[in-house]
Length: 195
Image (cartoon, rainbow, N blue to C red; front, side):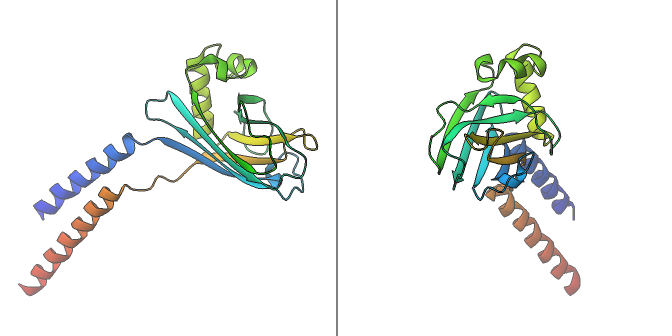
């Protein structure tokens, strides 16, 4: 029994270490029904935002298809407000692909003030890039940020993804460790029953 406790403590420590070094990931499905006000666009998409463990880089991935309101005029992350409402742009997506369907990938330096709109930098960031970064991360973590794609027909946005923390999968090594603990427990139970 003492061995199982020691192994269990080791497993908890390994899981904590694995999660402590993991990127923060936020995802959302894009749809016209997520816009405020909602629209009847049949377009769809997906947004993923990943922030590295040192909180210095943000990677954005957007996939979309079937835009009905015209080619994208702009795409952004908006922050920080409760879902079901609108707020100004926090980070714009430069060189966003101008097509009715496509993908977009960009890495942003979170400590570069130029990635934030002046309104977000001043209002939410207190005028500093570090403040804006902290506000953006807090908004993402709290489910108070969204991404969307704007075009001629849908000036307020054709499709929106309400961004929320993605579930964190256990690393493969942790699953193996937990499986080993289960096997040790089963073997111990068999020995106890035989005695």
